[in-house]
Each structure stands twice: as structure tokens, then as C-alpha cells.
Length: 275
Figure 1 (cartoon, helix red, strand yellow):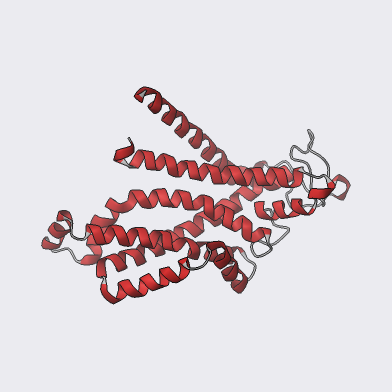
Figure 2: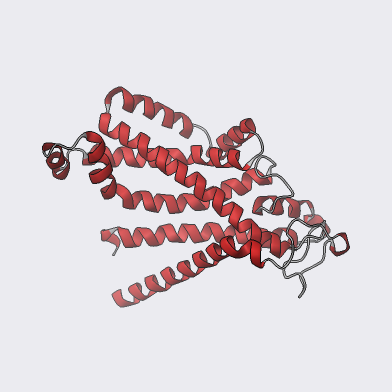
């Protein structure tokens, strides 16, 4: 049984790596290998069903949906990576300050985090994106802000627990100031949970960006983006053009699933209790 479990774990990790490789390749090479221009309208080919010429069919403007899905991979992954990176850096910094300093910095940062968490996160993202205007940068900022509490709370908890550890006290006795102690000693020890959280948040960030674009508060048409394509397909759902929303929606779902599985795999690898 243990050997069977290890074999299944290896197969799952191999499957996740294959999916991740596929998305990374699509993001890097998509604009160069797309068979059609994703923005060029071709009215004579409008609303064509999937065929050998158009694997995912065409939309109401005759644009090839496969090319648009392929090219959109770079944009959606870039938005998600940028948002999660900003949230990780800012949240970790705030959490480390809160956990190490305590006192009034801890109370102020705690109230800020509690205020963010008091709102439904997507509703808060909608409000931020609406205030900043329709742009890629507004989507990134809105997604980063609603993801920030996850890292701040995790880091605060870990830093406050680790600051009394023997290795931290030894570093202080050796003459290290608080900043090097946190950066060089504590953060490397608390990095694994943050890595798992980042992977899980990447999937949510992709969904959040697509959701904002779906309701018209994210990336603007005619840009190739998964949420925009699902929104365009929803407008044709009753007229029978199912391919307009099925293929972008399926790609979005698989991307979210991929990063969720990566988070689970990282947890299995980094957590000694689960090995």
C-alpha cells in the first residue's frame, strides 16, 4: 500500500508538471504559433462551428477562437503572476513587521487586514477595479489587494512563533539586527507554507481576473482574454453557438485546476508529516 501511494503521488506530480508545461509553453509561444490573428475580424467566417480550419470555431466577428484562447494564456498568466507576486511581497512584509514588532504596529496592520477580510473578496475586487478604471493594471492591483491578507496573516503567525526560537536568539546574540534576522533566518524557515499559498492563489487570481473581465471591469475588448471570451459566448448561449463559451471556459477551468493541484503537490513535498 505505501508503494502504491507513492506511485500515485508520482503520477499526480507528473500530470501536474505536464499541465503546467503546457500552459507555460502556450504563454511563451502562443502569439508566435497561433494559426490566425486573434484580433483580426473575418466577417465571412463569423460563427463557424469547430472544424479542421478552426479547431475551436469562430466568434461573432469571425475571429479564430483557438488563436484567441492560445494568445490569452500569456495575458491571464501575467496578470495572475504579477498580482500574486505583489501580494506575496507586500503581505509578507506587513506580516513580518506585525509579528516581530507587536504592539501598535501589530494592532494597526491587524485592523487593515481585518477590514479587507470583512468584505466578500470578489465584491471588494469589483469595487477597487471600478474605482481605478478598466485596465490591466487595475485588475492586477485589485487582485493583489484581496490576496494580501492570506500572506500577512500566515507570516505574522509564523514570525511571532519563530521570534522566540533558539536559532533566532542565537542570531541576536551574534550581533544581527532585526531586519537581517527576519530576512536571513526566519523567512527561509517559513517559506514553504507561503509557496503553497502562492500556488493556490494563482488559480484564484486567474479566476478573479477573468471574472472582472466577464462583467466589464477588467481587460477591455477586443483584447484576447478568457473572461472576455466567456462573456461573448454567454451572449450567444441561446442561439446555439456553444463553442464560443465552452472552449475558453474549459481552458480557464483547467488552468485553475492546474495551480490548485500544484499547491497540493507542493504541500505533499514540503510538509514532512505528509511524506
